[in-house]
Length: 61
Image 1 (cartoon, rainbow, N blue to C red):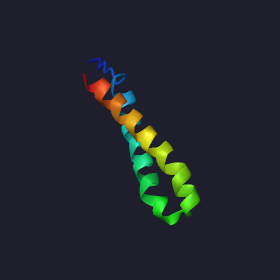
Image 2 (image 1 turned 90 degrees about the vertical axis):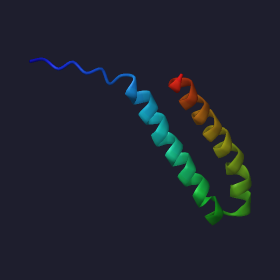
Image 3 (image 1 turned 90 degrees about the horizontal axis):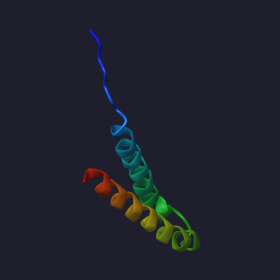
Image 4 (image 1 turned 180 degrees about the vertical axis):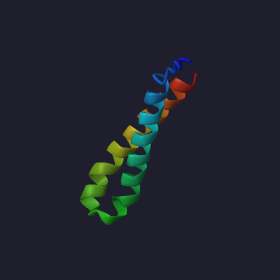
C-alpha cells in the first residue's frame, strides 16, 4: 500500500499564518516600547499585516 500525499499547497498558507501571528504579537508588544519606537514600527507592522492578509486571501481563491 502506497500513500502519496501532496502537502505542497498547505505550506505557504501555514507559513503565512505563522508570520501573521508573529506580526500580531509584535503589535501587542508595541505598548511596551518607547513612543519613538512605536511611531517607527507601527506603520511597518501594519503594512506587513496587510500584505500577509492579502496573500492569504489570494491563496484562498
